[in-house]
Image (cartoon, rainbow, N blue to C red; front, side):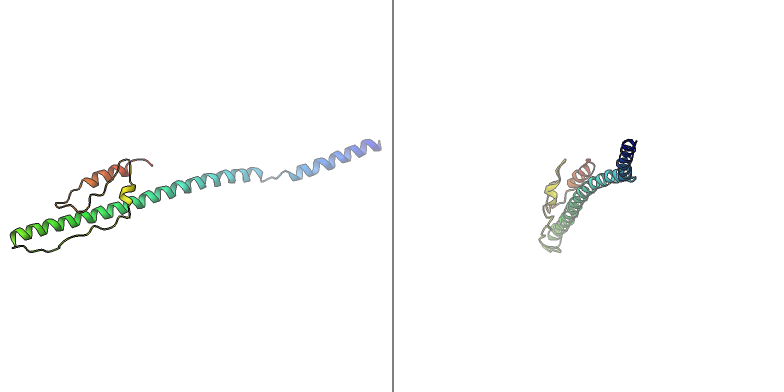
Amino acid sequence: MKLVLAVAVTAMLVAVPQAVAADPNAAKISTLQKQVKTLQARVVADERELGANFEGDTCLAAQTADLIQGTWGVIDQIAQALQGGRTYFGAQTQVDDFGNCGDLERPEVPRQGVVVPPKMDFFRLLMQWLHVPV
């Protein structure tokens, strides 16, 4: 009888720590770990999207500056022809796009530079680039 009682008490003592050791929050922790993993993947995707947005904005700003400077070149050409060689704006220097136009692909958005008369082809290419899924 003492042996049976000792075995029963030992079995209970072994079972109790296992029941206590089972973390009641284990399911919540597992769910939170999955959510963290999902959020980390989302952060990576968002950083990639922001980088692409920055490159697109820089390219747009630089090419718009080229377009404006090309317009000034036309004004200078007209003034030289009609006003005895007068120049209003003079030679233009293209602004730096930091290589961002060259980074755009699918489709490529090449930098045309200051063109007289200005051309707006880059807007079409940039709009196509903006609508390509990342």
